[in-house]
Length: 152
Ligand SMILES: Nc1ncnc2c1ncn2[C@@H]1O[C@H](COP(=O)(O)OP(=O)(O)O)[C@@H](O)[C@H]1O
Ligand SMILES: [Mg+2]
Image (cartoon, rainbow, N blue to C red; front, top):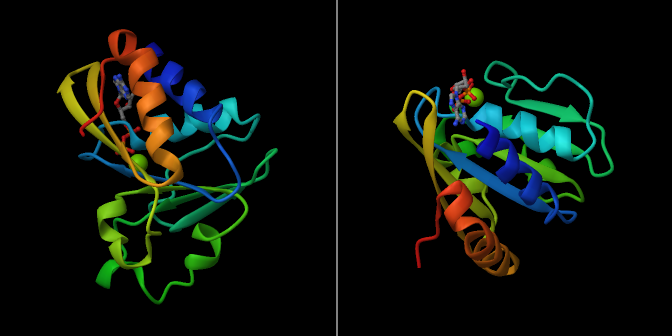
């Protein structure tokens, strides 16, 4: 858990306007938990909780945070007018990003959380374009401490 916050803190240090993080992983894997920590390290004081029933929650910070949950989206996310928040000058975090395939940008940071035990998680990071270097840097610097796995 402490390591999850550490990862979120590191990722918060890599953010830029238009940054998109796609989270996947089973229910209870820690997608919302990660987002809470990310928000904390973006300087957002609000209580970040699951946007499952609202699709989108917006938090004001240095960069705005758009927190989405795509689980209930039908037909891969088209038709909900979420694109303006994904292609924006803020930071967009999409839980269950596999259900938003049609509206995801060409490049984004994909983070898959695998449950390996009650309190342990394995993280897979993947990213192309501007995210490739970030994935590599996070992987190289913190692989041992936070057991990040960066697939090639
Ligand atoms: N290492 C960990 N990282 C993230 N969450 C963890 C970890 N260990 C235990 N947990 C617990 O797992 C649960 C994850 O729930 P949540 O973040 O809502 O998952 P999701 O959004 O993926 O459904 C929380 O109750 C959290 O306290
Ligand atoms: Mg969640």
